[in-house]
Image 1 (cartoon, helix red, strand yellow):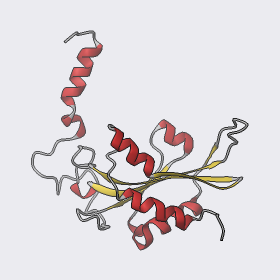
Image 2: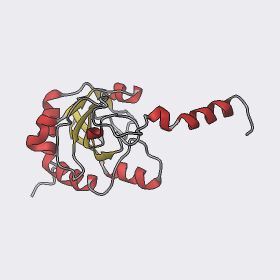
Image 3: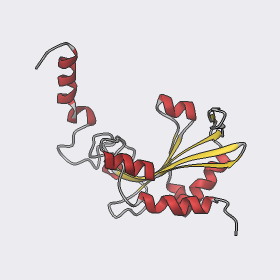
Image 4: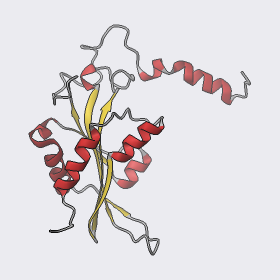
Length: 187
């Protein structure tokens, strides 16, 4: 029997871990940090190629004020990057690689199956994400976590409930408090 790690083994490990919690895009508590770490896996396929995967169930895209369309409230989210493995003994760091489309397609097939046709694919956004060329593959789901194709784009108001507030509206008081505090106001 081989001790070799396979893609199927990685997927069969990460998918159940994703089901143990939710990720909101922010790690604010020890429980959220533990969930995020459980859902992360680094795999050194060979001396020339490593894979870094994060597979989570994301919630709050609409209720947090990010997206106006409630169809974008929840998703399964695969973050994927590639690297040339370094050498810990010699203190040689990993070297980020550009997104490997062939490998990414295979990971998406394994994680999402036929529903991969519904994926929303995003390039890197943050400075760290751009350095590592992290791509994001999101499969949006209904309230029962069944895959769905959202009815329209993220910023449509066609399905938005009355009284919905954007992220900046929800956090306007926080921004004002931070601005006043940064000006040296002791209150």
